[in-house]
Image (cartoon, rainbow, N blue to C red; front, side, top):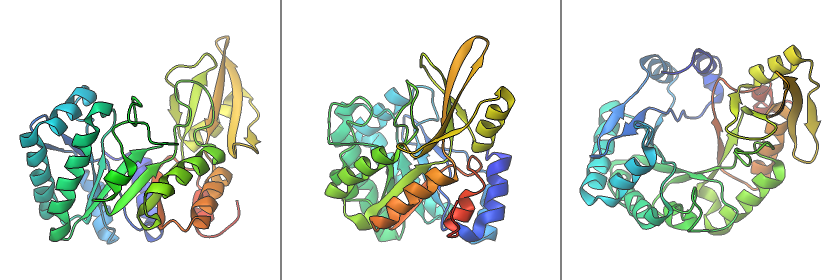
Amino acid sequence: MSSPDALADLRAHAGEITAIIPFWFGITAQGGLVDQADPEALEAARTYNLPILAIIHNYASPQYGPLIHQVLTTAGARHALVENILAMLERYGFAGVNIDFEFVPPEDRPYLTAFMEELGARLRPAGYLTTISVPAELEDNPRHPFSGAFSYPDLAAPSDQVYVLAYDEHFATPGPIASIGFVRQVLGYALSVIPVSKVKLGMPVYGYDWPETGGIPRTLSYNQAVALAERTGATIRYDPTAQEATFQYVENSIRHIVWFEEARSFAAKLSLARSLSLPGIGVWRLGLEDPAVWDVLAGVDP
């Protein structure tokens, strides 16, 4: 289900949104779909005549790595998934889909590419958009444990749009979510192998809170990050090199490091996307952002 904040954002800013990409359809080992469509969000999108690119993801099962491996490497399951996606689009009348598979084993690279080729060949003649989200890469590394399965040029060829998720620069250890230098490097590589007309920049609007020793961080919305700084008496600093906000605090004798996105960091990334003539951006996700982000999109300086 959509969060109340996300639904409120959707209703308040529908006129400034060109499409929504909701996290609605998980996959099964047989190539089926787990329908998690939110009736309230669906009604709101239709009220405001917003196109929907439904996300197809592999989080329907906690075993998402083995699950996606089985589906991609089994021809019958792969074919079934393509047909089920087409049937779902016809049933709902969506504009298309966004493939958002994560933790795909690197050795499954040819199977992921084959799936996108099969999907595009089926959806395009029917008038639906085929899009994919790809993890940030600085170069092609087929052995990388997280991004090795994603060949940018091979996945872009059968796709109408490629959302380059230029974030989570740091995850296991504290650091910027997406420093401007990192985003510039990721886009530099992406644009060297994908036509600019297909590239959309995936931008974060959240934050992470780590113990200084590292580990899995806690995800924060902008409002949660600001409230945490106020509660702990921390001073928020805007890092001019990373072009991102950060602060530190101590709780229960443990020092924490927080990095988070706000209007200035959003403006820096948006400016970069525009300077590179990208056709658009995608934001993860509604309800987490600094409210001033909407002013930035409207052309108001933060």
